[in-house]
Length: 108
Image (spheres, one colour):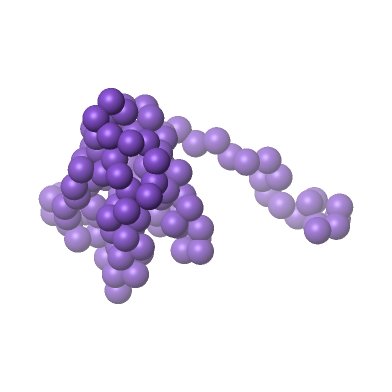
């Protein structure tokens, strides 16, 4: 990338966002979703969240499958389920996490 290209980047430095118990993937480019979900899960578990909700959207189910494949191989994920209708229904997944003392903090 040339120096002129950096002038066109709206956020040349990484943008730090607050980690809450909800991650909405609607604003994440699909090609980056896997890495974002993996890092989010690590941070949520490290911060002691017992449960989180990942909003992946309803669509045709590709994002949901990406999310759930990550959950399957993440050692500190206890289980997950579809969100209640008022919390997104099949467009969101609720994930239960072990605390740091209960499980590993590494992705498989």
